[in-house]
Amino acid sequence: MRKQGKGDVAVQFLFTVPGSDGTDDLMMPADGLNVEYGYALLAAPDSIARVTRALEPRFAGKDTVTIIFTNGNNTVPIRNWPLIQMDRYIRKHYKNVFLTTLGGKPGCDAAVADARKSGLKKVKYIPFYFVIGHNAIDFIMGDKPDTLKSRVGMEATIDTGLAWDKKVMDIWMESVDWSLANFSK
Image 1 (cartoon, rainbow, N blue to C red):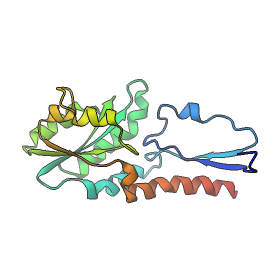
Image 2 (image 1 turned 90 degrees about the vertical axis):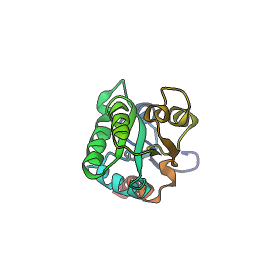
Image 3 (image 1 turned 30 degrees about the horizontal axis):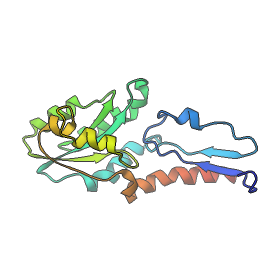
Image 4 (image 1 turned 180 degrees about the vertical axis):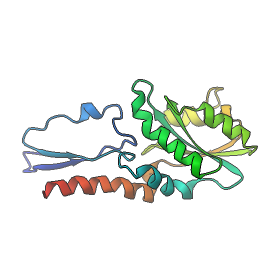
């Protein structure tokens, strides 16, 4: 980039929570470049409510449970704090909508138990990833006994990743705008 005469570089991570694995490795010194790093989707103080409201049109109807799923973190539990807060917010404001993490809290057990207690027969999974890879699809929708689909035991559908959600992407793009604004200071 320096060879092309570029001096300002905005880097936007596509992580949902601050401090996701790999962030430290990517934030390396860039001699001769002015680098601004954007923030994770759930980093801003009001982001949990805003992102949840943005996702609301994707929530299933009254006859279907909605489970939002993401990785979470077993090795650095504090990184799950925004997800724990989001789960609390969802449980307070929505009926039969739950958040699960594959690692760390809030985990899957409470959502699985609450989905089963609901008495409903269908579940819609919403991936809380920019894009969803085959590993997540296999863990959610696979036929092995430890998948979410098997554990919940309901007719299941899976939605697209966050990259296809304009309202969520608009929130994410605010971070890019913030980074770009830092260059004019």
